[in-house]
Amino acid sequence: MLAERFEMNFDYMNRVIASLTGYPIFAYLNILRINHAKQLIATTDLKFTEVAYLVGINDRYYFSKLFRKMTGLSPTEYYKEARSRHAKREDA
Image 1 (tube, one colour):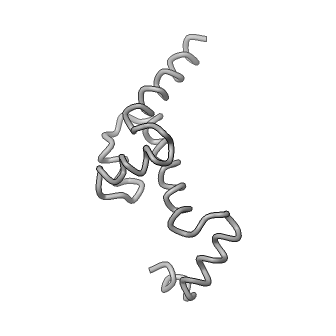
Image 2 (image 1 turned 45 degrees about the vertical axis):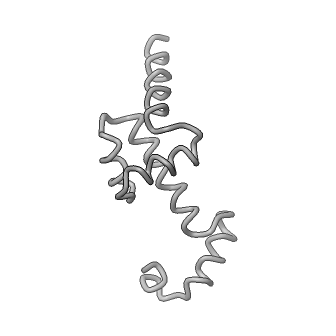
């Protein structure tokens, strides 16, 4: 779909993206997705299933697995940690 959208050969596009970002397209896309998910988890009360959907991942189990792989924390652990940091800032 990306190759069609930009009217490019996918392998070429993948090499260009990798040279610019240091990551192949799908790895970079997952980085963007998880960073957006972290922001949503830290700043909203959305359910994790909703967060997953909003960042483009339709399987909540895959989302949790990918989130843990990329952050070292489950979405729940990240939520608790982010809320704890936020509460400490408000107390200061």
